[in-house]
Image 1: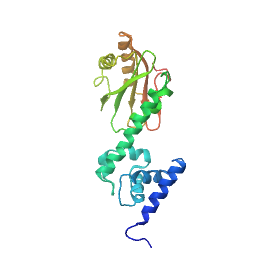
Image 2 (image 1 turned 180 degrees about the horizontal axis):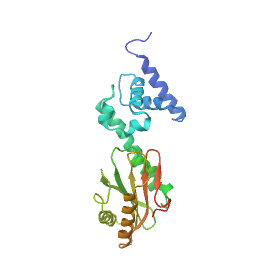
Image 3 (image 1 turned 90 degrees about the vertical axis):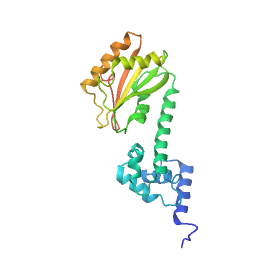
Image 4 (image 1 turned 135 degrees about the vertical axis):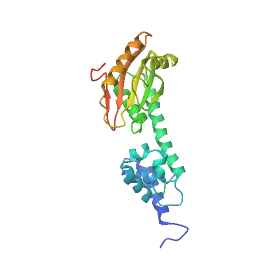
Length: 228
């Protein structure tokens, strides 16, 4: 019989923390990983029901981390602090993936950057266009989201993209954008915009290595598929 000073969930918290400490997350199911995460933001409550409620509402652990703070707060047991904490985890993961890519000697193929692209844009509710700026040796200088919302040749002009590349002192760029629908296949506008950017960038000696489109768990490289 548990007493009021030592609720039953206290022992469970310690057990899952020890399990992680000894074997990492490989043996954890999604709900267990989320339970563990929530123990660091939810005090004096059993995190198991909250974890299950989040997974029921959003469908997967990745979808929970992709949700907005307002969406997260709609789940019983999730306050503002916990919602911000979960978004912080997502943001740190993006920075981690960027550092991993940036540490590489050179970026030459879509495979070198696809994990970063998915970490950066997959799961976003609105379409975003990001530019990865590269040096003359194809090392990453920086990245920048230059547009969000409707991405077309009116909202994002080749001139704007080239101006951003010049300001970043980039010798080459990789374009990345997401399709919130989940289908990574390019539209004709995607292909046309990319070709126009290539022509405009060439005038200033800037190469466009690729345009990568991120969908839900998938990606599409215009270069690898012969579209540019």
